[in-house]
Length: 470
Ligand SMILES: Cc1cc2nc3c(=O)[nH]c(=O)nc-3n(C[C@H](O)[C@H](O)[C@H](O)COP(=O)(O)OP(=O)(O)OC[C@H]3O[C@@H](n4cnc5c(N)ncnc54)[C@H](O)[C@@H]3O)c2cc1C
Image (cartoon, rainbow, N blue to C red):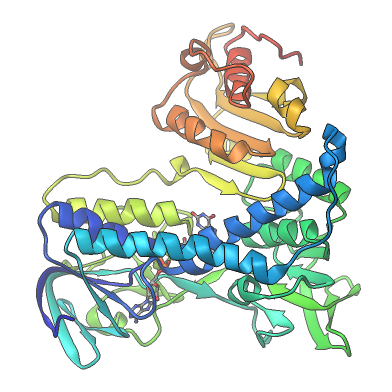
């Protein structure tokens, strides 16, 4: 292991943002030190994206087994063996973790294990050694947070980290927070047989998503037996003989074996020397500009840790990747473009999935843009009918500038239904390449696939619907 030393770039935190920066910088021939106190891969690989999606896949298999008779296949669902699910999940994580360590070693990135602290605008101390760099990139990420006065005990009042380690299926769960993490765990646990209730203060699940997508999700969740209390704040929790009792702002009381607190993630920055070295820290988040620069010329910051004034900065692994790459390219002498955060694809991997890119019609109105929209139901799509899923594809575009003219740029694509997450990759190309409905209408989509909903919605917006009828 290296014992201190000088590098071109010292990166504090080996999660999605930090390791992406390291890998790209190494491609420019930079000498990089990546400092990590736990495991490279960070939240996404060990406590986030990957383990949750493994659980969601196991949940899908459970649903398929339960519902197989619908398709004429005789099988029986006998239950979930959580230790086996966890070992499958762990197998996936370990394999990817090994691959990542190999890739970092292959690019000659020095990974230094230990608790790092920013000691000066050009150095980080770890285990008593000092690593200096021409540039330092802060990428210490985020961790689960709770509400004031609501203490997580890791047993009955748990975070997503605890939930991923749970070696049994709880009989019942209350989930505080109907954002992406809460909705994904609700979906998993319901498929595994638990009674689930989500408590969300906003009037809809997934408050950041299109209202129409949320309505479909809520309809399907209701049908799946997932309960939710919307527009209601959490008030208090107490222990019962068998679990917890939660009191809501509207006076309602709910009881369950477990309470999962999924009210968002806070930045990891306390005590790391950021403010002392001139970095602006607001509510724990490191403030950066659109190029991820702090006011200190030798310090950049990326990933869940950062806030950009005036921009709703999404805490997503692929945002961390993109920011890490952008910083590496800037330090490598290129002139990267700032990220368009509207153009970041977002997916909630529940059953059904919710996926979007761009803005909603409400956001367009707030920005003074008139729009036209088409809402293509999945009931008109062969593959979706084969899968037995319901949902919709909503596409919004700038209203035509002349009466009877073609709509302008596509401003948002909002999908809901089984497996639609994969379709958002095409939608993000459409959005980020400033395509207009007529451009997309000319492209052929393979039949029968769910991708046809993208083609059909754009055909309809361009005034030449195929199967769509309003
Ligand atoms: C349950 C869950 C599901 C998720 N699902 C998805 C998903 O499906 N898709 C998606 O895009 N995003 C998902 N996310 C979000 C995603 O995991 C994060 O956006 C991403 O991990 C952020 O990357 P990061 O590098 O900014 O931070 P992190 O991944 O948190 O990495 C920070 C790293 O810094 C290290 N570190 C911190 N302090 C120090 C220190 N002092 N010294 C040394 N090392 C330090 C930490 O150990 C950690 O490894 C999910 C998150 C959760 C919790």
